[in-house]
Image (cartoon, rainbow, N blue to C red; front, side):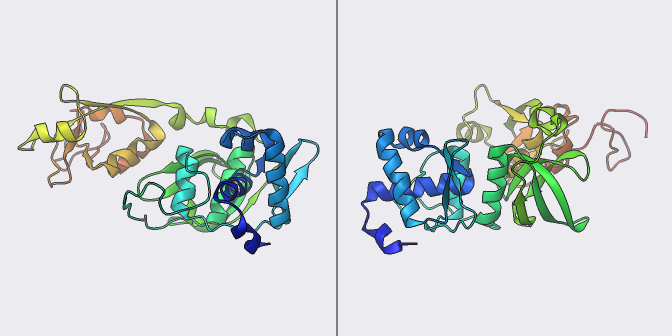
Length: 309
C-alpha cells in the first residue's frame, strides 16, 4: 500500500479515495456511477479514480465482471483511519463521506464520544450483510445466555443513544431481535446464502408498526412553558410517530415519565407520556421509565386497568 503516494494527492482526490474505501468496506461494492454522482464528475474520471485506488491498495478492490462493479477485496485493509463516530454518522445520515478531517468550517463543535463504540471490522460486516440482504454468521455474547453461535439476517442499524444495535431476524430463536454490535464477534457475511420471506424486514411487526405518542410537560414542573420552548411544542404537546421497535429506547433516552399517574420525580423527568396505553403491545416498552403494562399490578396491589388482582 503506497501511503506516501496517497499523501501526495490533492485534497479533492483524497476525498474520492476515502469515499471509495468507505463504500467498499461498509457496503461491499462501488460502481463508477456512485463516484460520479457523489462528486459530480464524469464517468471517465471515476474510472481513473477507481484505477488509482487499485494501484494504491491492490488487495482492497476487485472487479466483478458479471455485475460490472468493483467489490471489496478478500484481503482488505483500510488505508484511512476513520473515526467510528464518523462512520456511524455517514451510515445513518449520509453526509460527510470524504476523507476524515477534524473541521472544515472553523467553528468549534464539541460532541462527546459515546462509550462502547463498535469495532469497525464488525460494523463493516454487518452493513455489508444489510446491503446485500444476506445472512451473517456470528458469535454473540448475551447477558442471559452467555456465548453462542448463530445466524442472523440483519436489515437495519439502530442507535439507542447509549449503544448501537442491528435489527435482525435470529434463526436460532425464530424471532426478530436487536443485537448489540459490541457483543458480536467473528462475523462472516454469507453473501450467496438464501433468505426466506419470513426473515425479511417487512415481516417484523415491531419494526413496521408505527406508534403515535403525545408528550407533554411533566405535570409536577413549576415552569412548563420552558419545556414547551425547549422541545418546540405546539399547543403544549409534542407529537411523535415512532417504530414500535424503537419506542422504548427513545423514551428512555429522553427520560420520559411513562407512569400512568406521573409519579416519577427528579429534574431529568421533564416530559410525561400523556397516554401510556399507546405503548400497549410494544415489546420494549419495559425500557420506558415508569411504564407498567395495563394488566400489571401496581405496588398497592391494584391493576392499572382497574381490574381484579
